[in-house]
View (spheres, each protein chain N blue to C red):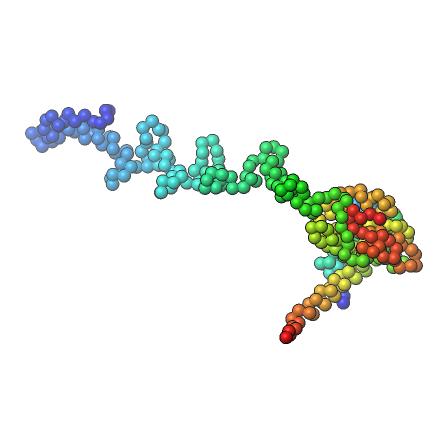
Length: 254
Length: 81
């Protein structure tokens, strides 16, 4: 069937002597119906079952990914992908840039820019740590704000640790109370807790009679020391060391 | 003031020490660490746990009293000329 249809019927009459369409004109009408019938409905609109030349799918499928405004729907997929374009482009801004450095896919060992972001937060313009709270070195100075934090009543071997606050360069950090029990009188007992992130609050206190253990962990907070005596009440720690111990702090080993 | 203390659990930490967790009135935590001298002697362990119960109560009591003192000051007005 040629396209456009030949108009041979124009060379003669449209109808014969009986008023019926001529053979030529009837053929033209039939071919016209064969072409337009599947493509147009009675209102002259393109039917969604019509096909575009050279394509196998119906036009309803072809344009199914477009909204009424002609915009691409967010649910439309790129060939070979399972997610909708809305998901694919969700991390891009109006200028086509990533909205966040965390939107870069991991390379198998984690997102490198997430690490870069951490580095950017932790360093100042001179590539130095942006504050002492960014360091977890054991020799970061801090001083307790209480005169004593440790005590012993000379009756029990247990040593209560009062809630205390430590003063750092970046500010203060407060720790909850607690206790340790060496099970014997004597000492000095060096009391400490590990808090590498300067979170403060509830910590697990430890004790040791070995002075070096105060420096045996990065982020170690020193409460101070106390020597306990059976029958004699003692205090320790804090910024004074009390009556039976040494001062606490951080990087402040006595 | 009545308090109820509870021994919630324990975990082994370093140097043969154990961290024991106590809770007073279901809200106030008291960590208590015991050494190997205590852990290897049932009598000392029992005494230490009993002591920690009492200490947890004292801690909670002290914390409540501090808050009560502060709460009592709320609403105080001072006239300035």
